[in-house]
Image (cartoon, rainbow, N blue to C red; front, top):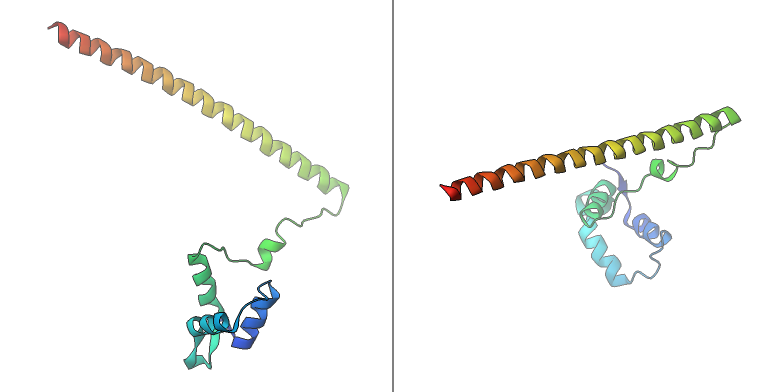
Length: 127
């Protein structure tokens, strides 16, 4: 689905988000790139978002804005949320400990393999 906005509405939106000092030349260049003559010079917002993503600017949606605004209604929910956070932290600690154990085990295996290779090399030189 194409989301269209008029050129004037687009430029007003650009100014509203903080780009108040856009010159006439800059506005003309923007409209040259973004407006579609076959759509009465409307700007396709989907295309604009894609262009911005290509410049490394992530899309902004209202969902992301309110994602971390949850406020529990009751004390029970607050307690449950604290317990979940504690569980997550405990799981993260366990995972870290296991990763460290795996690294230590891998180092031991590498040292053992290295010793075997040294012995093999020394045996080959002795022959």
